[in-house]
Length: 200
Image (tube, rainbow, N blue to C red; front, side, top):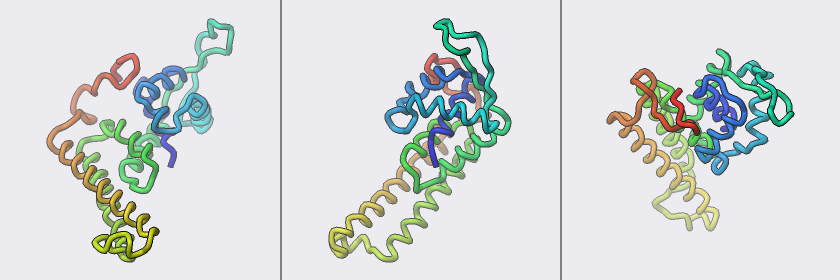
């Protein structure tokens, strides 16, 4: 799973209609160029590809003042919105992806209802626990990594990562249950996620 599709769809959706420079500015404002593959080239490529796939509509507007091609603004389609929510749900529950997938999902989780977000995060914990159980069929953490030679450090890392990931997710669940953040349908969204501080 790639984070770039979710990042770009989510950024366009937050604006309602946005040109590539706005999307790029938002993603850089979030630091996405540091923790994901959201580099300028991949952002513009994703916009064009998703327009071809019917996930976005490309609108050509005023010609460039610098004499280049007309500026293109993108708007998310109904199909794009469905894809956005599918990717968001998958990214919140996926335990076996690169960190940028979960990081991206966290940035957009408030687009879901509170109860749905909680359910997806609980599913994430269950998936991590099930995966951990498969590792510990062959590796007993209490025996220490040395029991398998230096290769045991791999299993030790996996188990430690699973325990840390599950605990972090449980803590997030508790914060959300306690009323943290404004989720879909609960009121005005958090202002400050767009580079120009425009609310959705």
